Image 1 (cartoon, rainbow, N blue to C red):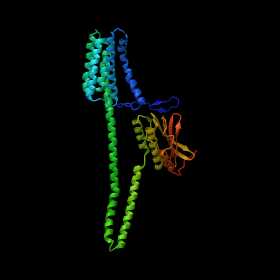
Image 2: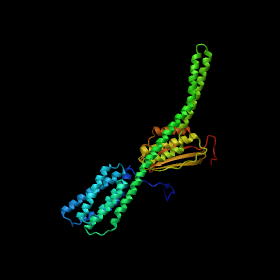
Image 3: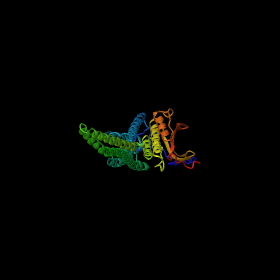
Image 4: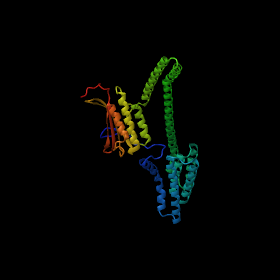
Length: 396
């Protein structure tokens, strides 16, 4: 989180998702720049090729070898950010780099020793931990032995090869742990949904089991009484009607409770949905809703869900700010929800079915809705009464 020195507002820094491939153009640029910075070790081989001290055939062969080495390295590293290659393909590509690096250094000179840095990085980032612990020292030893060909003394590069390689093992472990945590979170969400279904099934059984059993019993009694005692049968039918009406009321109350949206849950869900879509989100914590009518809370929760859905699906935004504010007006206390994004807002310019339905829902709760383009994006503002009808605050 950083603080704007002009406004004092705190905003979340853009983050690049760990363990996932680039989800949009900005992430692709960021990750490309991060990988491209480390290509600085290629400056020495490039200068050596352009120095003119090699024959034409040697220069061409060196350029082809360097191109093959860099293409293999970049393909391996870029693919490892998203969907990694199979273990056999990884070993094959590292083998290509392990052959090219000593061959180019041995034939063209010590200026090419930096290639072993990339070999070490590839081993640490893409190989299993146990194999990388052997491959990185082997690359360091190979670099030292090839350097003897040119009577090179150990320098800082010889230290960088194992240090960067083992550092990449740590980064690889972090990426794998992040992926496992993401899968675990999805599993927990699925288990929570299954538990909620079981709870709903138990509640419906408790609500309807007794009522349906009673209706079945009285129906059998009414059937047996109908020929000889129609008055008693009519009484049983009246009891059946009463029990069924009460069962219907119980089911409606239960379903209403399940369907009522909760603002706290929607705020947490908005944070997860926006983050998963690659949108940098600033969402408030659990709100203080003491005294706020359930109808107002539910309407505001539906407004938040609709707004976040529009941001994720239609806006093309990469930043979203959600604010929840208590306001005191002449008409009483209000609870205001503001959802602002920096997207194109093309879908928000025309009120669709979602916004129209949301406007009707807010009006039923005594609230209002404002939605439209702003200078750098789109904003939706929903307001609902923060106190029950007739409980008017001090106003001014």
